[in-house]
Length: 91
Image (cartoon, rainbow, N blue to C red; front, side):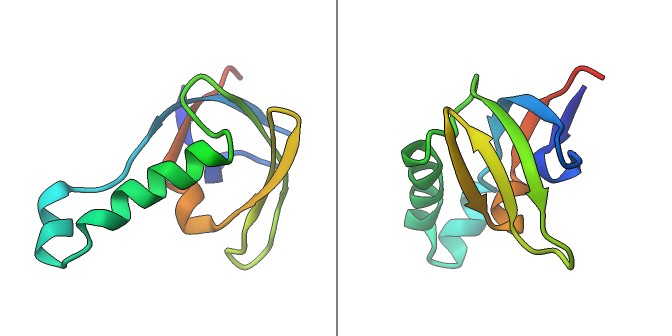
């Protein structure tokens, strides 16, 4: 079952399947074409790429960031960024 990273509860894990960046035309119309590449690159720099197992350590209340464990590191990811990361979960 494919879910958003934000749909996982504390302690649950999954394998990253895809990262949704947004519609290309919408970015061009708003002058943000370069931002979508920065988003993907930032995730890659953190080690969050398709095929990576990620575990939600703690989900902050009131739509705050998620603390996740991936590739031996703990990372804090903003909620809006985490909503665009999709994971495969076996429940």
